[in-house]
Length: 437
Image (cartoon, rainbow, N blue to C red; front, side, top):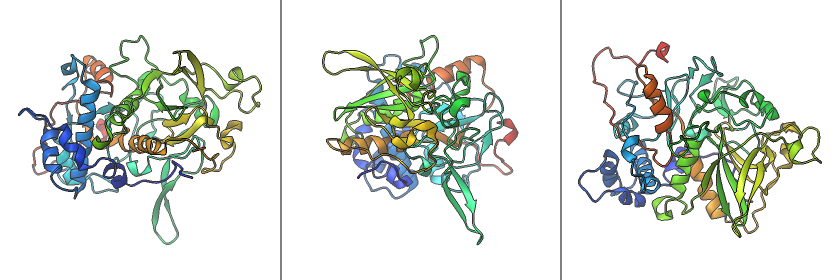
């Protein structure tokens, strides 16, 4: 059976999904090209030979997807240039594990990249980021004192179990160090290696502490498409209907919209030729109120309530997404791909089964596995994680913070086309002090 769980490499995430063939489609016919477009032109003429070229190709893909998502947006200029981000590393970049090379530092000067600020830090998460770099702490809010950062895209996959997707270093007696999954499925008290807290299904799996977190403490929850709502939802769902089954990608709206923009591209552009619809999700109902015959251990588990429209007749009805409907978790269980028709028997009873890998096999009969694998790989390659090469420098005014929250996250317009100022090469330069975070 073709399972979604597994490990990926940066090359698999980037190179195999986003070939040079799409690069030329991102090029403008005019002379006023963006830095990414100019870089793509050179990249398209030769195979990728470095992380620098891979990163450029990925950004070109984002730019192409951005064009699809914003082709009808007359106010696109409103989303440009509101926040200037500067590199804070020395000229050679980080020399720690799985971190950007100096070539990727050069890529950052292209200034093209959808960004999300992590609240109560000066950290930035970007789509397609490689991750890595130093770990930092939250200086305020619900997660004050906890650690974020350090996680890479190589660890983006969890399993079909809530609480999966966290990794740690372990040392053996012979002095070797390994980076492997944390097999404990309880999410209480977790740090956030990729910058995002886990989803919450109420008290299920230790997630109660994340259920009523103030929205100002959560990254990626604002979107230009939803910002006029009086109170944005903490969690959104991207509805995908194919093979006569209802799928939902559940998580922050910024991540969902970059995924949606990329999968909407044609296959020869690196996409999946499919487009979903986003909606805010409600978490008011427990499984016990939804199903009167539920076992006691599942009764208090909360689900995400979605409105689903049937393809025939346009009838709208409510469906609940519970942890046992999830086929694949990503990014420390902060994002989940669920199928309403899927029921993981090992995830019931309050997540008491502690087998990290245990899951009911997915019924693939009649399922378009090519499309599912395309969506799965796109999620893994594109969703935001902390980017160690970027930092918010200086203190933002109230107006800047409002603009940042509403505008720089992914949505119908999710690229900022400002410019980064390359730090001058001078003796004695040091990174931004940790105390400034």
